[in-house]
Structures are given as structure tokens and as C-alpha cells.
Length: 78
Image (tube, rainbow, N blue to C red; front, side, top):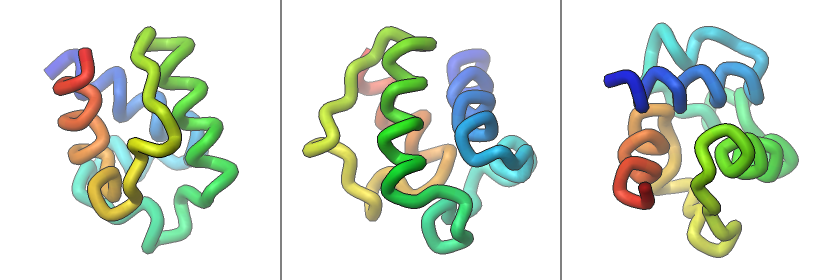
């Protein structure tokens, strides 16, 4: 759970909204919390804070659509 909380914290920081921590199933793109520029910022933050490199080509908005799904994808990449 600690890893997920780290991921939620990074997403909240990039989105500038703690709602992602409170509701990890929120659709961050549909809700306008993250856009294409935010996606790049998120991937850079993930790499710098977690040491996980996510190629932009592997970032599918339909798969990485909620904080929970992002945490699951990153856990598989660790």
C-alpha cells in the first residue's frame, strides 16, 4: 500500500488536486485533472521520484486512466 500512496502523492502533485488521493478511481483525464502536458510532467516525476522509466509510447490513456490503474501499471514495471 505504501507504493500506491507514493504514486497517488505524485499524481496529486502533478494534478494539483488531492482528490486523486481521496478517490483513486477518479478518471483523471475525463475529469480534466490531467492533459497531455501533465502526462509528460507525470512521467518525468515518476522517473525522478520512483526511478521507473515509462516510455511515452507505453502510456495509454485508456489503461492509465485512474490513479489506481497508474499505480498497478507502475507496480508491474518495478
